[in-house]
Image (cartoon, rainbow, N blue to C red; front, side, top):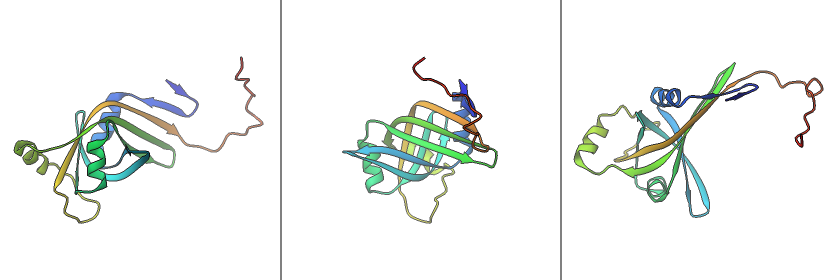
Length: 147
């Protein structure tokens, strides 16, 4: 589906974009507050893995029923965003931790983060936007939304 200036991105392309980048944002609800944290990550198939340390982010993603992960890019002529929903869990088995240690997850700032969290994606969507000047409202026909 597309509208003027916006095109939906296929799920396959969304997963490809998730694999191509390494910085995103994770969002979740804690009680009545929404929290958003930047994370460095690695995507593989329908999984996103990131490192963290004990604190609000780790506690929140483990308590949340659903987490949302987002990446985006804004260029001169085009912008896009990918939003993924899923469940997060802490990696605990020795084999999972050994595999996670080998992932190319580079920290944004040098810090010790010993916990690994994996998001199992249940839904992925994306949109691509063509950027340009604001249309002239006088040139656009008025649309009656009651029709």
